[in-house]
Length: 329
Image (tube, rainbow, N blue to C red; front, top):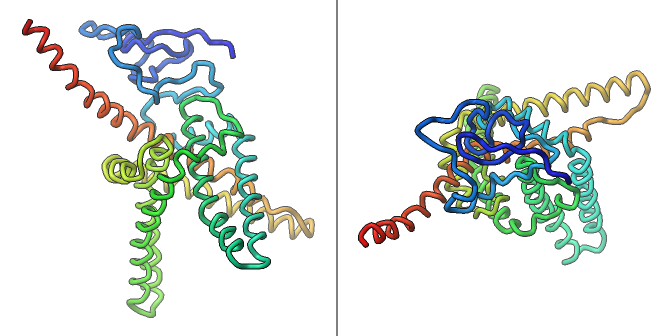
């Protein structure tokens, strides 16, 4: 692909597209004058290699966000924009994963025995986890402006093990809202206890869902499951909990509304044409990519900058003794 014209940020010196107005690295306005007390750092003068998450190919088809800081509603909007750039690859990948799941589950029926058990275990657990790992990696590439293709939707082998541990931890966490729901519904036989139990359980499940959201992208980026739980969920997730909760609420609101609308269309087709196609399958094709793109966007804004700062901070003390030795000489 042909390279586009680039400019250097007057504040940090990072090169990027000439048509951008906000720097991808520092988030400052490219049209504003630099601070007179600080000079931009040239790429050749940078003492350490530029962190990989900000190395965005300049010839990518996807245009990065308008600004680095985004609201939960903008996360949802940006997720659909990223999905729309390569919607064909996303939908075909989800369709192929669905076909593979059906084939594995159908092949497990006749005969029984160990082959059937292996097919069920693969179809019910390993295949969905592999799909989640692959789609999470693909979402990170799309959000960073890197190339997205159908083959890359099946590249989750490298992070499969850590994704298994992370999902097991998240699933174990869901025992809390379901336990609360069960306990409250068992406190009495009235409808009030049932309603309160369902409401409390749903709220706790949404809260856990929000805390776990950046961790999916964190694992896909090569971090361990333990780091995704400790840093992604507890540190960064807890710090931006209300933004994440609102984003998860918007996500469910959009797709629950889409499901209801799809069923209403299907009912209309049955009443008017005595038959039709249930359009709910469109929601099933779109929802998984939007979820993982949303996870990648939240990870990039909430967790990734802090991880890069921490990585750079741990590298600085190594250089300090050299400076002290030089001054002593």
